[in-house]
Amino acid sequence: MNLGKARKRSGSQAFTLAEMLVVIAIIGILAALLLPVLANAKSKGQRTACLNNLRQLSLATKMYADDNGGHLAASFPLGDADHLVNPYCWCPGWASTKPLNPYYGPAPQFDATNVYALQQGKIWPYITTAGPYRCPADNRSVGGLPVLRSYSMNSWISGRSYSDPSGNDTTFDTPGDDGALTYTFFRRESQITHPSQIWSMIDEDGSTINDGMFLVDMDDSANAIVDLPSTVHGSAYEIGFFDGHMESIPWKASSSDWTSSPADPDWVQLKSWTTVKQ
Image 1 (cartoon, rainbow, N blue to C red):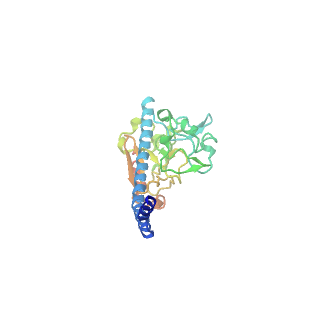
Image 2 (image 1 turned 30 degrees about the vertical axis):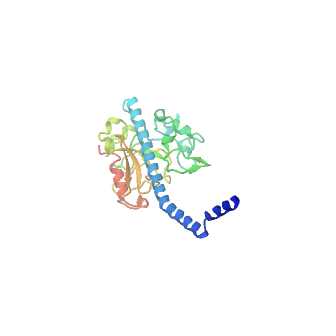
Image 3 (image 1 turned 90 degrees about the vertical axis):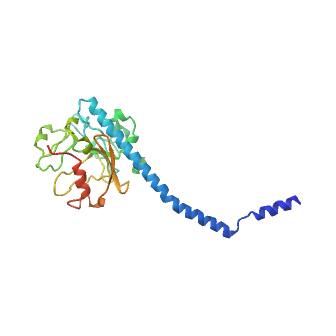
């Protein structure tokens, strides 16, 4: 008697095929509604983390200057006859998925997946961990290992000038040539008189990043530099300024126009934040 009642109760609670199809359809609809929301939340979280990384790197460069008489850590990565890489570089080594160019240091120490390269940089003592050097949206890897660096420094910070209107150029190694430039080549913090208007660190696109120096063409006619701000965050790229504030900069045009258009608005805008006339 009791067994029969139990079977009857169990049968009355069973789903029909139609009911199960309705439940599945509802779950599908909810998933379709929730997935874009979750993806958007993930994207926002990655952007926030990227800006925080840039803040830590920028703060480290400030602390280095404070501890070294106002001298700025250099963006110039190349060594000389006595050094494998520039011992004053903020972060030497390679960050491309292409084979390491030994010009930037020997393998495996200075390849894209070796923390040793980060540790040779002048700001490493203020960071002491590899995490802030990599954007969380950067999914690049080499041999199954993550590429450790996503960020580059403004090349006009003790790195290399490029296409100065004067026709002259200088590098970290040629301080005697700085005075012949139209634009300021920053070697000391005191030269940056408007720190809220000069950028120091940028999230560089994985398609162009190699060394830690982001070249900016200061010519007035066309951008001949392939170094490209990151496109992994979609409609904006991330950048850090000398006064410590960070910004997500909306793309004004397609990133494919970066070097193809003689007056690409994104290049013109970034150029206006790169250096100032002497």
